[in-house]
Image 1 (cartoon, rainbow, N blue to C red):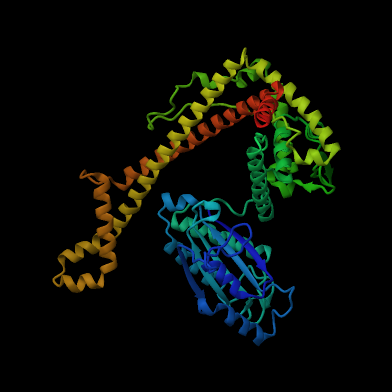
Image 2: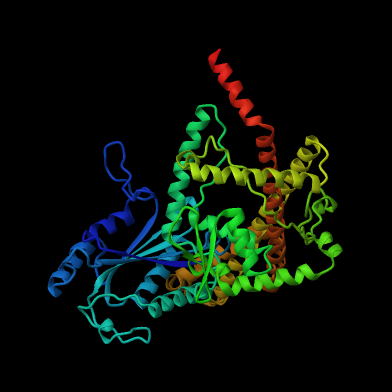
Length: 549
């Protein structure tokens, strides 16, 4: 799915934007990466174009325009706007998207939506956070250089005149999102509805807070490992994510707002408030409420009231039916190696996640060491989680640790097998998409090749239609290699095979996700058992004895 992000910058150095697009930068600090001699390093692959300016004199041309209109002189003025169109990582593998094609799409997008502005359009293929997704950067001067036609999404007349600044209104942003959706639909790329609010709303600020927090936690855990201590917390959780997880767990069992509020308070020490029919939540470490709308649509009053009603209806059903739906060992009836034959749709694996959480180690919890009140809350929570762990073991019929570890190993094997099958299906789907792409290319230029065969002056005809004939030869050669000398498949059969593989992939994803969640739950139980039995403390004492010796 392609998304569009907007960043407003008050930096008066326009050259910094150009340097960021051309040279490698650190993702966390946004500072350039230098070589041994202290020089900046060029990006391995990038495509750069300019709109209404030369890309390599973008900074000076923007300064000249600002001086002409006497704008962008104050430090608190927005000097430039940075738009980023990020394509789905699967577009490269499944849809054949290249950096060169993405640059053409980005340049067309900029010409259509920012026609009067000086702009840099640059495509990177390295991807953010090593994801490998192709993304296009569009950096525009906030001051408009040329007059443009008035558009319906513009609120004021001056938004179409030269010498006035770029104004991103709600209607303008909705227009840009719709343009991205239309562009991806036209190109056959993966896309979701960008105009519908997200179920889990994660802002740019929260995303980077999670990244930085995870990096600090990893460094702390590495230091603990060097000291011979096994870290318990490996995943950093923002305050908003803590609220989301807690609300998800509470909403899955609560049957009314009152019960929902009680669960949040007793289990997670979260205060729930209803004001003007809007839901708000107070994190135990904060003094200001966070509205459900800031967390996502899953945490607003409309969604939660429906969830309460569904829980109430399910509670009224016969108890025997509920117990059948919550049978814990459903996976034992499935074959040991799922979907070895990819033509068969796997049977669904039903897993209902419990509210079991990891027991927190107070010796490694920094926040608990800094706050005695928080440490007391953690102790009470740990007692509840230990009791729930013991109840979980009894309910699922594990008579010994060996039985439990055998179930954990079996769940791990099922997860690995389902992951492998999913990867195989995705690889097959990638091959079918390539065949569809080259078959369409072959059919599109088949008539040109036929005219070439009939032409009397083949050399002149070839020179005039070199690009079309080259694409035809490439498509024909690729299709022959894939068919192995057999008859080329028709588009109808290829699309039928694609539909079958897409259906199979979706089922396998659900199957893999359920098994992965079940394995994670068992690993949580395993970690809690170790805490109850004190195995980690014994290991630390043994390490200390060895160091003394």
